[in-house]
Image (tube, rainbow, N blue to C red):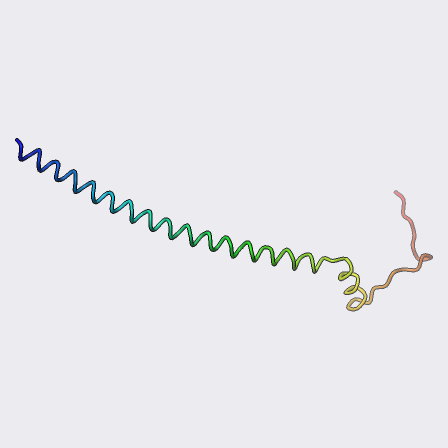
Amino acid sequence: MGRVVTWLLLLAVLVSAIAVVWARNENRELFIRLTGLQSERDHLNIEYGRLELEDATWADPARVASVARSRLGMVNPDPAQIRMVRE
C-alpha cells in the first residue's frame, strides 16, 4: 500500500511540474505578444498624430483659398454679383 501512495505522489509531483513549465511557457508567449502589440499601438499612435497634422494642414482655410485661386481660377465675386435668396 505504501508503494502505491509513493507512486501516486510521484505522479502528482510530475504532473504539477509539467503544469508549472507549461504555465511559465504560456506566460512568456503572452508577454512577447503583449510587448509586440504595445509596440504596434505606439507606432499607430505616432502615425495617427502624423495624419491628424496632415489633415489640419490640408484643411487650413488659407491653403484652401490659395489652391482655389491658383489651380481652379476662382475669385471672390463683386458685391453687385451677390444675390440673397430667401425661402
